[in-house]
Amino acid sequence: MASQQHDAGAGAYLIRGAAILGGAPEDLLIRDGIIAERGRDLSADGAGMGNVTVIDAAGLVALPGMVDIHTHLREPGREDAETVETGTRAAALGGYTAVHAMANSTPVADTAGVVEQVLTLGRTAGWVDVRPVGAVTVGLAGEQLAELGAMADSRAHVRVFSDDGICVHDPVLMRRALEYVKAFDGVVAQHAQEPRLTAGAQMNEGEVSAVLGLTGWPAVAEESIIARDVLLAQHVGSRLHVCHVSTAGSVEIIRWAKSRGVNVTAEVTPHHLWLTDELARSYDPVYKVNPPLRTDADVQALRAALADGTIDVVGTDHAPHPSEHKECEWAQAAMGMTGLETALSVVQHTMIETGLMGWADFARVTSTAPAAIGRLADQGRPLDVGEPANVTLVDPAARWTVDPSKMATMGRNSPFAGRELPGKVVATFFKGHPTVLDGKLNTPYRWLAETPELPGTAAAGSF
Image 1 (cartoon, rainbow, N blue to C red):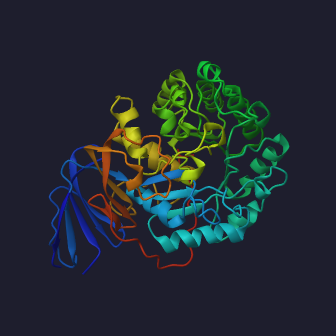
Image 2: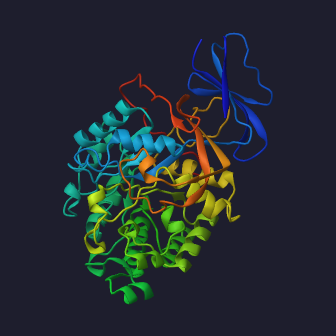
Image 3: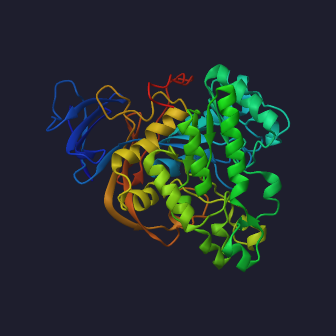
């Protein structure tokens, strides 16, 4: 990607010859935070345009900025694992312009004060739009509802609530949460794991766990909670989102629920689209994750479900840990993998290069759909005139080898370390500002307003 500046003000960028959603090459003019023009052979010397930086994007694909529905930024309280600053730097380098920060920080994001703190940390960093996820229950303890309404009415305008990392296993409490969020068009994102079926579980229950002598994590522990919750969502007429779906059986339950008109959405992680429980034979804790890596049959079912829309989005479940929590024996190791800087490449490898999806589909599952689920009015928008300039430029022909030591995230627990991956983010524009240029961090966006935009109403046909 080559760039040059034309004399004329400031903050304008002319992207030349990018394949928008993988289609025919076109030009995009970004000015004042929006897409001002789209077409072919646009001029960089128009009257009143100011200083225009021209970016040669021949061979690159232009996508709407990616949106992660499931990110662990760890701050406040767990800055030894990640901070909002380091996590959002990783997000920008991965092509993201917005992330939803999960609630399992210390203290837990279960009050208006904590979610507003996370919002402020995100705005101070300036690399992406950080949208806090509120806890469903106080302290993630599963005993009483958190301050859902107060978090929804706060400056953070929380619309996604989750105890992720822990299942809301009490059906009465789950019903009450689903009923409560209806008042402000919220969604409950469930970590589907029946705790009594997974006590002491270390990996997927199956042939490999039997050979290794590790306590198995049965698929039914996930599937039973999803089956219960889609029925609850149907009963109360509320929105349910299922986090990190990992089994073929879960796919079938979600497909059935959607056929009955239940307002349910679901996500799959990049690692569950590729890796299997066979990797546990190495006893390398980098492959220990919740939910666990499953079988190849599950992987194939997840890919097919993402392609046909049964699974709506790719969520990274980016879960950085200090090295001492992963570089230890399997039984003592923390569960989780990093994902923000590798997600695009893994989805390209598993879905696009296999012919299951094209770049327009990629934009749907990594940007449009997650923005709609999170009710982010200015994210996931088409790359059209007048739309917010949240744009990612990708070189699909690039190849790179994953080296966790060179990543922006503090976490070194990438399951793709040493693997060669396709596709590389070349530039990320957040609100018209280039946070990433030439594949490197540029400068953060500086917020001018103290109060964030109110969440928008989902368009017809969205979630």
